[in-house]
Length: 95
Image (cartoon, rainbow, N blue to C red; front, side, top):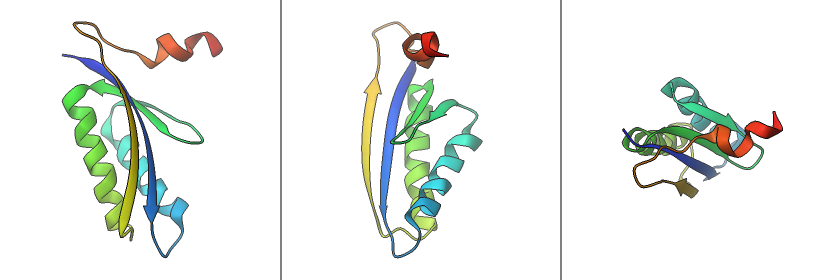
């Protein structure tokens, strides 16, 4: 199983409260069971590669369900050949 880190920023186009839509996307991450870190400009998710990508799709669908007509999605992905990636190795020394 390949563990990756993915940073995702979703900017929804909506007539309503943009942050309320983003909150729905973050709720998908919270309910996923994956390790995550919510930051001011993005959410970082750690997990098995295919599962993380499923969560990315579900986050977008949650935005549409919350009233977004369009989403701009910025993704940064870290993968390693035959080795897992952990949030802790990047930020652990700061906690």
